Length: 300
Image (cartoon, rainbow, N blue to C red):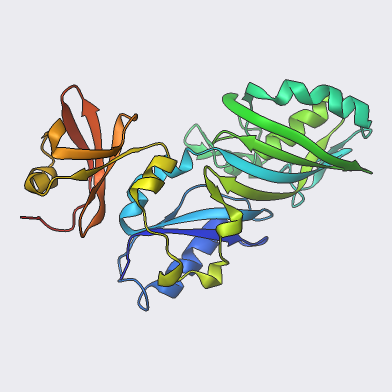
C-alpha cells in the first residue's frame, strides 16, 4: 500500500486549512494509514477562500519548503469602495471611498506587475516581536509589519461590474492577495478588500486534478516520482544499492553513487528501487551530501 505521497485537495469555503488537514488525518489514520503517520499542508488558504491545497503525507512532509515555494495562481473578486480590517468579507468596515472608474483601474494595474514591495495584512500569521500579527491586531494595536519583496507575474482584469472587479493573478509564494487588493484600491484613491478568493494552481499542480477533502483516500494519494521532483524544482536521481548504507548513515557520497534522471539543481530528490523517495542530497564539489534521510531501513 502506498503510504507516502500527497493529496491535491479542493478546499471549500468555510473551514480553515488546518481544519481540513486535521479532518483528513482523523478520517484516514487507522483505515488507510498507521497511527503516527505525518500529515501537513503546504500553504494556508483563509477560511473565506477555496481552491487547491496540497496535503503531504509521510516522508513527503520533509519536502514542505519546496512545495510551499511554488508560484500560485488565484481568481479573486475585489470589492471597491470599502476596506475591512481583515481585508476580506469577514471583517468590519474601517474605511470607505468612491469606487474608481474602469479607466482609472486599468491605468494603475501596471504598477502591480513584476517585482514589488508588499506589506502583509495586519490579520496575518506573520511574526512580529514574537507574536503573530493577527494576535496584535485583535488586541487593538497596529502591528509593525515590514514590507517584503514579492513577484506578480500576471495580473489580469477579467471583468468590472458595479463595485466588484474579478482578477486572475499568478504570483510568487508569500504574496498576499488581500494586500494586493488593498494597495490597488489605495492607488485608485479608493478602498478595497477581497470579496472572494479561489486558488487555482500551485506550480504545475492544477485544481482541476484535485478531489474534495471527503474523497481523500489511499486510492487518491499521488506518488512522489522523479517527474514530480523535477516539477517542484529539484533534481532527481536513483541511489546505487551499494551506497544505501552510507546514505542511511548520512555519509558523503561520490558523484557516481547517484544516477541522475534530472540535473540542473544543486539539491536532488533521491529514489531507490522498492522504496520510492528516500531523501535529499546536495551537491558540494565532487560529492553529494545528504540533507534529508528518509530510508525506513538499511538496504544491503
